[in-house]
Image (cartoon, rainbow, N blue to C red; front, side, top):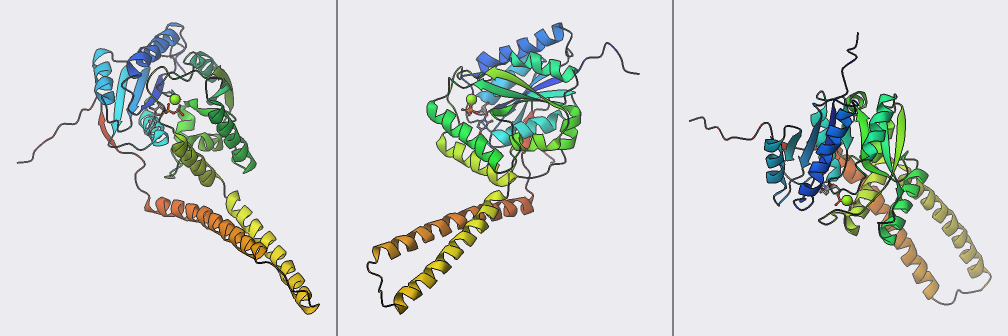
Length: 328
Ligand code: UDP
Ligand code: MG
């Protein structure tokens, strides 16, 4: 029989990379949220804010350790080096396994509305196992970011990856989903695409995305493109099929071209001008190189997967500081 006074224990997972400027502003907000939710009787007082230091080079880890000393609701783990946002969230989720009933992952810069957590927890209590935070407005993003981001979601869906439109990495996951997700061992992870694959009943909470409270984005165009490319190639093999299709179409066209050229030659019409020939050769060369690049991307992924290297290395925990021990 279940204890009617028991409440779900929540871990808020917050990846942080060089965030010394914004952490002192947002950390108390996460704590307040835990107190408010616990005060309303929705979650347990034993809930925690778990920071994941993603190999920061500034004072982020020192700050996290200081928070943890000041209030037991703050805890933190540190990665041995920077592994990127996705792996930082993954490290937090895997740490939370067996230790809580629900996790909510959220960026540490205050861009995602912390108050949306109320509705997330409510939907969990109403039976959802996953609740996606979805951006209803992106006014604070530049036109370029909005355009590229929305284009990316459309492209992903077109390529057959089942991802939630305008949902980033702000989501609630129950312990049950986390347990199933732990069986996804791939090295190239793209959480937005993987979590929907796990299944279970899911819900959605809409919120307006605001601006960063301090510090700078770590996602310049280059990293954004890399993430998009990783997302597409780790979730869908349609690009390879498209390449095959493209190859087939070009082969047919060039076969017809050869016959046509042969007829022209036989009927005495010599083809004038080399410009058209050269441009077609260049075009074909370009297309072939792109195709090789895409195939290379998949082979690279296979290579990394076969190595099965660890996806994250936790070097320290606030409750388990590292101490050197000598044998001599
Ligand atoms: N982040 C991380 N590792 C990285 C880059 C980013 O853990 O290598 C964290 C960062 O501290 C923040 C979140 O991921 O909490 C989102 O990053 P950011 O705000 O820079 O991205 P944007 O919101 O601009 O897309
Ligand atoms: Mg941000």
